[in-house]
Image (cartoon, rainbow, N blue to C red):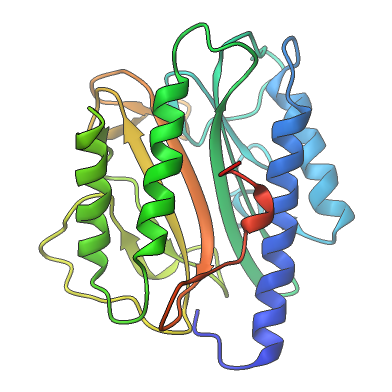
Length: 254
């Protein structure tokens, strides 16, 4: 989305604050012994209280209001009363929503309780790489160069990136141009970030796999070679200098 006036900026700020607050509070609410349907219902109530509508539910008829992926599930995990949160789980929550015609998207992975399975280094890498990638985004920068930065930083830490999951434009719909902000250098993508546009930038940092595959439920994705993945995502406004992080209130970097 291209921001052309103050009204549009305020609209994006409001919906971004709604998804960011919901993500932060869901992360704080998650506890051992809770099922993921309870956690999703909590997020749904928060979005509703702010007048926002779940983007995956509205757009894709997703069987939940937020995506909650556990351990070897990479993304698009379906909330379920059968999935019980346990000590040391690697949890990813992705919250996107629509409010007054504006759409925003954010997500984050974290370890629940004690890090008994040693997932924290992967989570920390994903956070740090996203922060570095966003700091390099401004109008005129090649999208593929940011992909190269993400993959290079992942390799430095001994990790891989998922090549068929990408960031994207957002604003007037959940997914819009640019449709692919990849985590690797896509030499066929010659497009550049444009000043005053809104994009959702995401890291998909993996221990083993480089591609994500969809399970038989039609939604949940896992790695083609197994392992684990951490994802962190912010919706940002591209400028001629440092981008404005519209979802900063999710506190995924704290």
